[in-house]
Image (cartoon, rainbow, N blue to C red; front, side):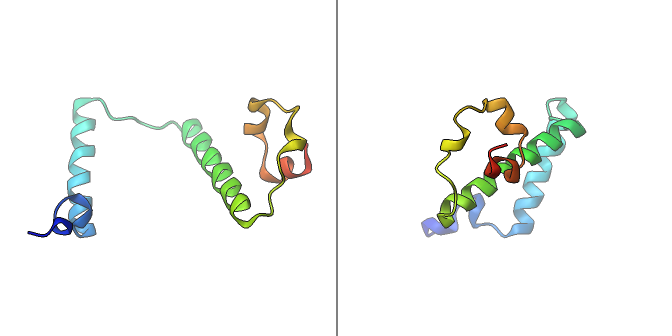
Length: 89
């Protein structure tokens, strides 16, 4: 058996989903699964979007050096949209 023929990643997508689904169902039955509130989901999506856009800006080389954000607290930065941050608001 070749090394690349082993493990979860080498399985087809349907088989991976089937196995992962069993884990999720077991966690719910056990009572240890995390249930997202709408607020938690909203915050997670916002943070992911900010990180994604920041990476994209950095990769394209069009991002600012961040100097205009020196006086802004981390909490304020997290609540900003990318447009706000670019304008330094």
